[in-house]
Image 1 (cartoon, rainbow, N blue to C red):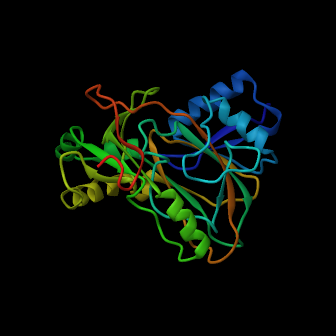
Image 2 (cartoon, rainbow, N blue to C red):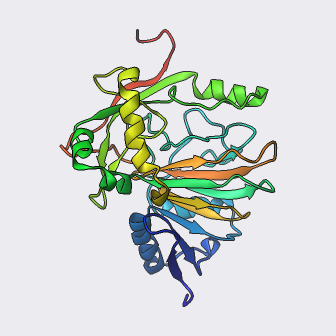
Image 3 (cartoon, rainbow, N blue to C red):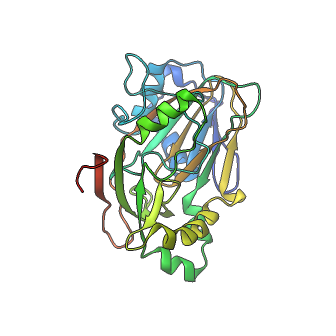
Length: 292
């Protein structure tokens, strides 16, 4: 594999991996380099991969145990660990970290392009560690002490269609809430990162109204253009991002055209803050009227 290369796509986040066929399996030495790049660049892109769901599952499984069926979203028939991200169901055009409303959000997520619109539909990924580094000391001192409540009820964009509304209602039918440190320490690299996103509704000890202004300020550092990578898909492309240090955004600019990606997620660990405290559950699949 002499052509194997990892090429940065930006100064602060993202790299493209060239000379690798994910359909033929990876040697331990090649995967070790990919894993090292994954930790360094936060998101990796693989062009023109002609692979199956099984190969995508195998690749994702090299990073850790695969996440079982998502608590709210539909999955591919016969493959409960594969979620079809279909623009007719849902368009996640908001910055978020996957299932951060649970105690142990995903370690990472792989996406594979199946059907693409003639234009639009790019994916953006932002570096929470770079956002933390950009904070002035005064803001950093505040962020270091804060905890945030993440909930699936916080931000679910409306498509305005019958099918989209059905999916939205299913996603929000039960309430999931977890409290996470605003500054999360990466379990492998030890790097601190701002851990927020659209599911972060309020800070612990504050109301949503009291929290929103500061959440927006901190999010602004994560979403700085220099801290983001933007990927224009081709059918067969695969990406994997480190959910422990990134947020992502699916751009909804492709009108009524079809867009389908297959998603496979890797089971994560419980976030840890700078003081060593770990995230905790507030609500775990509670329906309205329960537990009150």
